[in-house]
Amino acid sequence: MKKSRILFCLIILSSLLTPSMVSASGSNQTKLLITFSDINSPQDYVNYYTFDPLNKKEEHLFRRRADFYPTGVISKDQKSLYINRLEDLGGKSYVGLYHWPLPAKPNQAPSLLTNRKQIWGVDHLRINDTKGEIYMRVIQPSQRSAQLATYNISKKQTTIWDYPNKDIEVHNFDYNPVTDQVIALEYSLTEEVSNIAQANKRQILLKPPAYHVVLYDSMGKKIREVTTIKKHILDISFAPDGKTALFSATDQIGSEAKYSVYSLDLTNEKMTALFTETENYTKIKQPQYSPDSETVYFLTIKKDAPLLSTEVGRKVRPRILASYNLKTKEISEVWPKEKGTINNFLILR
Image 1 (cartoon, rainbow, N blue to C red):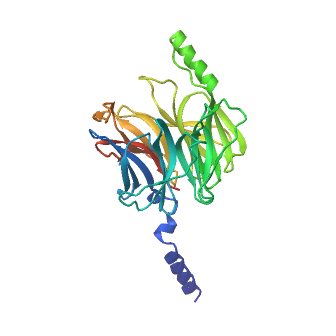
Image 2: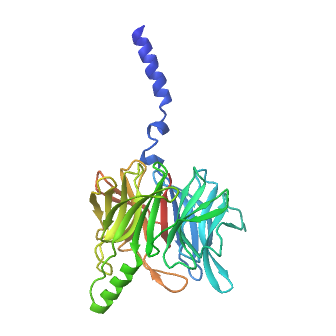
Image 3: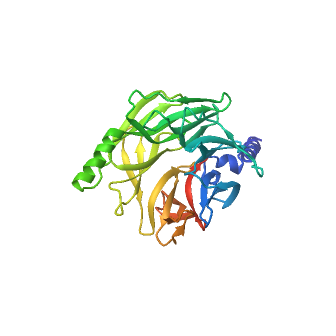
């Protein structure tokens, strides 16, 4: 009788642990939002996709004319897409935050979310679904540095985070829903200008400014500065558990630049080099962990990729989506779409 009870319990437990529950944090749950630019003459277009890398399944959300370096975030229920978009106001260019309901309908006009007088530039978006807020990097008419701001979707209010030192430039940032924190890369504009002047005057390699890795709570209150890094850093992203961060960087910029991906422990400040660009895959950027932290997705340029001509006649070598397996140490192509280039992507959490 006792054995039969144990067997019965095991059967019930097995039926409850469905594959989706067992692998809820596994790589098969990875889903990405990808911003992809068609490069065709005479017109270029921007496309927004969601993509499941395990099943190689993509869903095209919508397509629009290219007008500015595009970025976007999508709500957890995937019914709302938020993008930045260029607008002309009496001869002045303005980049604002827009809401596009999904599924997109033909000739559907998106709604503007930010105040034109308060903000003149919006890029690098993240979303806090719990609080219904968009995090964004913004440029104000009266401010020379880029700063962080939040847009409350229900209240239709924009709050620009207060920085006592107006010389601080927010270079890049990420939001983690588990810890409800924002991680930011910040540096001094004065130091950057001085480094550029010295490089030009003395004909030497450009020194990077000191990048400060800073943690904030979701309301913009500074928690602490984690560390300072003296490399040319492109971007930063949280690990799923919020305990470490990834960033891509190089010791020098220019034709000889070689980019690597690093992991930063946010507790002990230990920095570990994970992988470096290879002969075939160069200009690595935007590294992001998969939900199980076993894979790093990133954008790269394939060395033998053909040059494409943009609408304005500029030649570009397209970026593709690739992955690095932390166990096997192998790089794989994930989304090498033809006749265009990936602007950016985001692991959906």
